[in-house]
Length: 578
Image: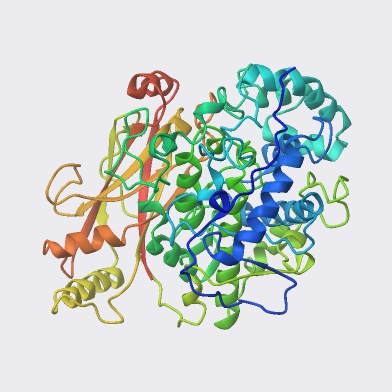
């Protein structure tokens, strides 16, 4: 049995110091009892100290305790939705009950979970790293508090996980079967690095030191690393990572400006949607809207081994990451109410959404949550009594409604199979309303270089495709060109529209989908780049290319082997202006 370090905390000022120059935050809702603050603001220091105390206590609870640090992460592994319209709702109570548990173990009855506003501060808060003066920091998963190897974890948790499965109710087992775990053996395999073929790989770090791989320079000179942009740094497998690009305020702005709750299952672009597509149950992946697909997914995948997986709550930064995701949903809800718009699914969709059950939450007493287990319950903040200080996107709460103009699906003139390293093309004319928007942008941006209010718009492209068998092992790069030429990476008239990665599927052996997925990219920068070259006119067409690259260790050869099972196919692209 492995030894989990129980050293005393080092709560030094150096370990918990942040810049004191930030202004005092305005409270978003002074009536809430608990106020979640920006982790980089000095006002968050007491909460970060309390968080650290509680995390260490939970790491040292027995493996069979419901509040053991790894046990709480298993709730996420067992039930969390990603890539569908329940994504935001499920995570709200998961974070809310966790916040209450931290109050219990920290002894801080006023604790509120800080949020990591990665758009304003695209770097991990300094309190989450070990240093020479703080070598045993429990907020860093490379510290001695965490299991060093998969074998160490398995020795303690295999009997616990199998007993846990046996204790689940019939309703919980129905949910686990939908997720691909019909029995205790398959359930344990999901935690054991894919010991069975249906297991999801890398749910527990195979080596503790592989966590936070992006902090290698930090370990040398103890300077907090930024999230890097697409060209600044390479991942260990040789591919560039777009972490900073995907947390830019423009990505947040597009999501918050969306006037409707959830994308239809068809991916059709009658509007712009805050949430990912409708699905039949919360264990299905149907696609990703802007905030889930880009800042959420990319930040997870960039931060290293544990954060790349469905056991990502093992890394304490997870909860600050998702606290910010929840904050952005709260901003969207406030904006919708301010504009007199609905924060709910469309009337005909409400029953299907509201009735979905979430059955795996654990409360502050260590008991299964009962009585408030539906998605309708999960949407409410009131039971947790919190609010947020303003952050990126809050400025849009009072902004006017943006007019949405959409294009019909483009016809696919070429559709080469999507495989590792392949290029698939889509090309077609946009409808007249959108070409007028493009022309307006072109005319206004060239007028002394300053866009007018109507021209300062965002453009979205929803890509519909059937992914290849190695869906979770690929990066999907979208390239855009004017329609009189093909989108070919490297050509002068072709620009990068965005880079998408799945979350929680990296290395999964059966991550392919038979049904089409819908991924929404923000292509505003690409449209502006084409305009700067004088390539946008009133009758502009656009062509698109989806280029896939491996994000796996082993590079293209490993991904190419996986794609032999079945290639994917690009089906079309729709475009919206907001």
